[in-house]
Amino acid sequence: MARFNTKAAKAQPTSRVTSTGRVLRTYQGGRGSERDARSELFLLAVANFVSQQTFYESGDDRDDRFQTLVRELAVTDPAWTAGLLGWLRGEANLRTAAVVGAAEYVKARLDAGATDGPSNRQVVDSVLRRPDEPGELLGYWTARYGRAVPKPVKRGVADAVQRLYNGKSLLKYDTASKGYRFGDILNLVHAAPDPDKAWQGELFQYALDRRHHPDTAVPPASSQVLTAHRELMAVPVERRRAVVTAADGAERLAAAGMTWEALAGWLQGPMDKAAWEAVIPSMGSMALVRNLRNFDEARVSDEVAARVAAKISDPAEVARSRQFPFRYLAAYQHAPSLRWAYPLERALGHSLANVPALPGRTLVLVDRSGSMFFSRLSDRSELNRADAAAIFGTALALRAADADLVEFGTTSRRLDFAAGESVLKVLGRFGDLGGTDTTSAVRSHYRGQDRVLIITDEQYAFSRHGDPTEQVPAHVPVYTWNLAGYRAGHGPSGTANRHTFGGLSDAAFRMVPLLEAARDADWPWAA
Image 1: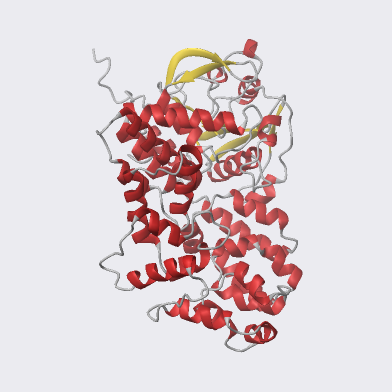
Image 2 (image 1 turned 45 degrees about the vertical axis):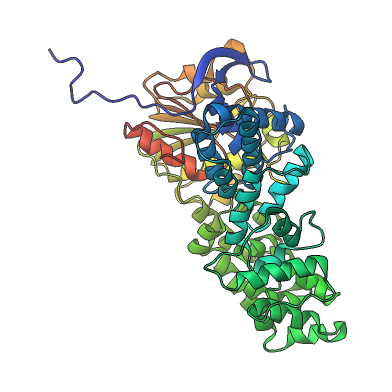
C-alpha cells in the first residue's frame, strides 16, 4: 500500500528566517522564540532606519545590536552578509543600514584578518548607489573609527565615485553643508576618472577647484549643465524672477540642473505660483509628491496640476522612484486638495504591485497596538508602523479571492470592505486598540481559512493564552510580517508552514505563492 507517493502528498516548504528552539520573552512578557543570527540580522536590517527610537528599544541599543550582528557574520558568513548588504541598498532601497553595515563589515574583517569571501572593496562599492553616499560612508567611518581610512574603503569609494559623479550630481550634492565635499573625497581616495568618460577628468578638477579655490573655479566647457548653471548664478538678484517667468524659464532651469530647493535660495524670495510652475517640469516624481501641499498653497493652475497628477500616478514613474507605499499615504494625509486623492490612490496601487492575489480563504490580522503607533517609520516621517501594517494588510485583503481583514490589540474586530474599494478609503476604518493580544485575535477569527497572515511587531503579551501560531492547525500556513526587528518572535519560524518575513517593502509578499507552490523560500537576494 502506498503511504507517501500519492497524489495527495504535498511538500511542506520552509522559509529562511529560522528559530533556534530557545525560548525568550517578548518585551510584553509573552513567550517568544529566539532566532538564529542570520535571521535576527535580516529582520532587524529591513526594519532599521538607524538611530531610530522604537517603543521598546532605544536607537543606540538597536544600532549596537545591528553592528554586533554584522561584525559577527562578516567573519563567520561573509558571502551571506555581503549579499544582504547589497540587497539592502538595491532592491530593499534602505540607504543608511546598508552604508553602516558595509563599514562594519570591513572593520570586522580587517580586525580578524579575514580574507575569504567577497572583498571589502567590492562590498563598499555595492552599497553606494547615490552620489552623496561616498561622503556618507566616509563620514560614518571617521566619526566611529578615526581619520585613518583603510585602503579597501578608499578603493571601494573610488569605484563608486567613477560611477556616480557627474555635473548634475555635483550641483545637487556638493554643498557647503557637507562634511566631505566632492573635492575632499577625491583627494582622500585618489579616485581616477573613468577612462570611458572623457569628460570626467575635467569634472574632477572642477570639483577640486570649487572646494579649494571657489572664487576662481570655472566649470569645464564640456559640461553644458555646469556652464548653464554658472550663467544663471551670474544673473543679478533683481532680474532673476523675470528669468523664471519668461517663456523659456522652465527650459533654462532644467538645463542648469536647478532643483526646487536651490531655486528657492537663488530667487531670494517666495516660491510663488510662477516659481513652482517653472520648476515643476524638471522635478522628480517623489519631489512632486512631497510638495503637493506647497502647490496648493501657491495655487498652481489646474493644467499644471493635471501634469503633476499624471506623472506621480504613472506606473513607470512609481517603479522608478522605488519609494515605499507609505510615502503616498503620508502625501494623501497632508495634501489639502481633493484633486490629488485619485492620483495618489493609483500611485499607491502601483507601489503595491507585488502583493499577490491569493486564492481560497485568507485571514489577515493587522497589529494596531500601542507599540505600533509609538514607533515612527523614521525620524523624518509622521507615519508609524501601524500605518504601514494597515496599508499592506488592506492591499492583501482587497486582492485576495476571499479575505477576512481584522485589526487587533487588546481586543480585535473585523473590518468590512467592498471588492475593488479604495485602499485609502479602507485605511480610514482602522483604529487604535491598546495592548497586544495576538493569540486571542487568531483564536477569535480563525474559522478554517486556508492561510493566516499576521502583520505585527511580534511583541505580544498574555503568555497564558499560548503561542499565537499554535491556534492554527499545523497543516495551515501562518505567515508573520515582522515590522520592527526585535530579537524575540511570537512563534517559531523556519519549520513547516510557519514562516516569518520582515520589512516595509511589498517584495516579501512574493514569497507566499512560492511557498504554497511547495518551493522553499530563499533569501531575497538569492531567490
